[in-house]
Image 1: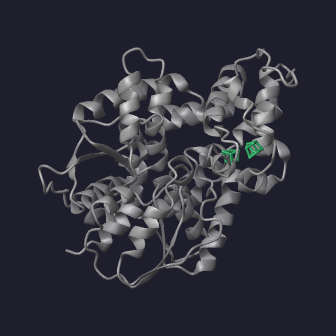
Image 2: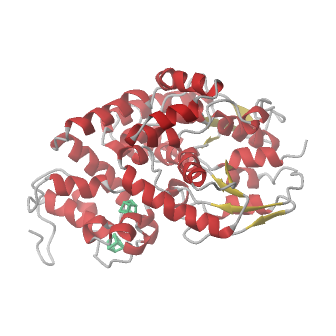
Length: 427
Ligand code: SF4
Ligand code: SF4
């Protein structure tokens, strides 16, 4: 039990960094920022409730039963609570450690274990993901994707609905132009191509490079890219997250880049926290810290050198804040400033623009019911703006929101910021 006025007792179990749990003063100011609390209105589905549960587990006052695991599973890891918390509770760090504790100590149902194992074996490896999607890609070329969707039911059907078109789109084709390095003395930037992003949304990588080059950066390419480890961090596999992190640190530091950008905000945040993840690594703790300090966001970097020349685009746009960009890296204004610099564009703000859409890495695959409720909530707010475009800076949010808008027959286009800026670039 906690000693009044004294130092915290020694925890009975290693759930998460025990000292950090004492930063929560139970004020409740985070509750309305929490998407799962907004939906369920249950204290244990709020950040305060989950921190309480972590502490009770650590102190042996609660058991890791089905209920406890469920409250943690339902957390999106969106970190909206961190932005709202006046006491600086490091919730993201706490939930990542807690997930590792859950995976080590909780026995899931057979079905759940199979789903999680399959996701972990396929998603971080682009070749495997491409191979798995090959039949669907072929079906799409034969205009049979709709038939396949109709033939499926339940989770497989929901998963297929989430996938973007797999054949090239006009925006993807536009990205084929290679980024040109203009000034040999300009700062060097490398774009981390990620795992899922390079298979499902590679135009976002290529257009990030294109925009950076247009802003005057020297864009260099990594020889190969491995997963950033975010999927493992979110699913409690800290061991493999560290393995991926080590490989990335070696590769990226060798490239000599001054800055690193990712089209996926979850990847940016994961790499920005390599310093913490590898802090006990005898060889790579220092380089990991150095790499974390190089992580930047596309629009902020572009604005530093002055926005490139954009053509006129007479259109209305609403902007969705991807969780890890706004709550992890604290980027809110730069993408909006850049969008507003495009002649003719009118930015219409939606309410709750920084509320999670339910995508949250692989959350929409493992927790489809809650993910869908959040997607509906997001779609309603988007549709109320009547904007022609929804711009965002994370492929996962793009797939999730686009799928929900398609279900509703909306004609609004969901476009990644890098793709949108590439469309707006003057020739
Ligand atoms: S990370 Fe998101 S879902 Fe989880 S407790 Fe915080 S606000 Fe709620
Ligand atoms: S996490 Fe922060 S905002 Fe939420 S109850 Fe604890 S101290 Fe208050």
